[in-house]
Image 1 (cartoon, rainbow, N blue to C red):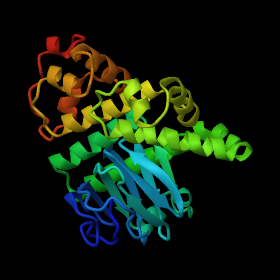
Image 2 (image 1 turned 180 degrees about the vertical axis):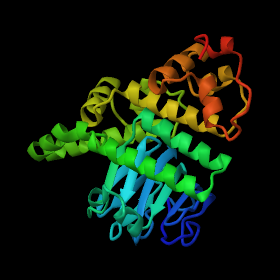
Image 3 (image 1 turned 60 degrees about the vertical axis):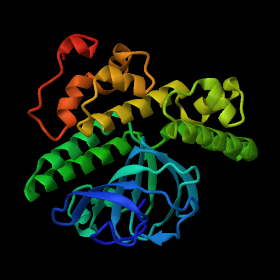
Image 4 (image 1 turned 45 degrees about the horizontal axis):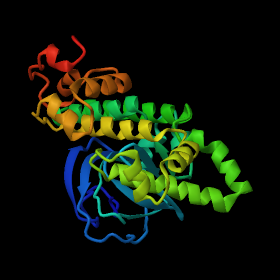
Length: 314
């Protein structure tokens, strides 16, 4: 995760590989993949710009304004000027993410400025449609856009993100849990840590671990872990694992990966290609072969034959 500020994301940052996507007036869009050298906490940095960080892979801990949390490929982290942010990679798995740095004056001109300029950092979880919108935005930038179109696409995405948050995409499912914490804080804080540890294990795995193996890794029984995870996150372990797998598939397809879909199914722990297709299509609304065309930098690439898609025609 970046530690520095300013127009160049490579300045004063943790070691990372960078790819600048575009830099229209007042907005910098880039992708980064961290190279973990120190697993401890970085020094807290006071932000001077608005940042939207969208997870792509990996897992890390963040400390935003003193509150510790966990971010992974499904996470969205928004910081504002004055926020203090530090990060750590205690399990050594580097993360990749897309970052949008937006100057305050750009947001001040938007009709929804008051909601963007509010003084509080925000951490939430995206859903698969937002993940797809993120992937399509990156693909469009890689194909090449002029400054005018870059600005327009970015402003549309920011509006979508704000609408998503207003509709409850900000961890609203944990409201009752947070109320219960006030009644039994010690127990439920321990449960939250257990759920976070399970997220770390799943996000840092190759998706071939079984439920028993995940439970052993976090020092719990499968039944207890499943019940606690559902209570703390509002999602089953299976649903969360599928979110991570689909997000990984989207990221792989966006990198112009030429491997057959059957091979990708094996890599990401699906039963077979048909299973991969069913899960991806159920979450995103498109089969993998179509997503491969939508997300790659070459919009003219030929599709795979539909019989290899596992479900027939697109």
